[in-house]
Length: 129
Image 1 (cartoon, rainbow, N blue to C red):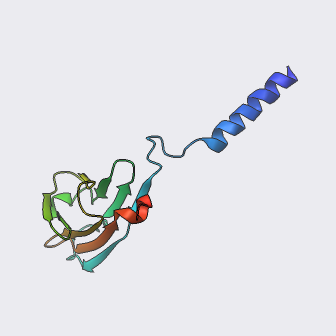
Image 2: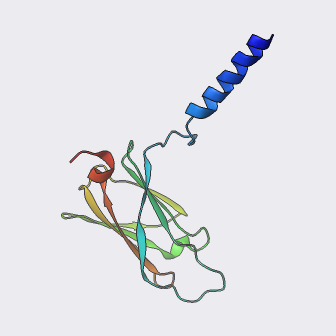
Image 3: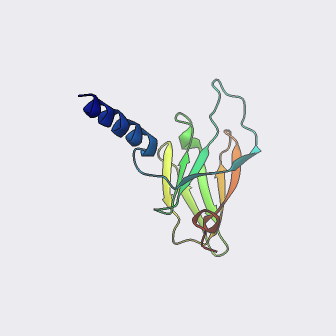
């Protein structure tokens, strides 16, 4: 009985030690630095700053905006040969960027919620130089 209990205890410790913290398996999800260029106008409630993440395995850029004021934003992705505008329809925007250049400039613009800028270098995350 003691050996069975010891085996179960060791198995549980091993599972918790080696288990992934991310349930969906996005171990390659990296935060992209976004800086504010233009301050937002005063509002009744504070507007949450956008956050951007890049998932290496799917080459997907995810941008999380303020859950209330997301409709105010327009997202612009700019590369050496293309410029793409995205009209925001939800608080989380998923954009496939695998077909674009390695270096992508991200502009998140709004008339009264502030403007943000960031650069995504896909080759820096995937180690393919």
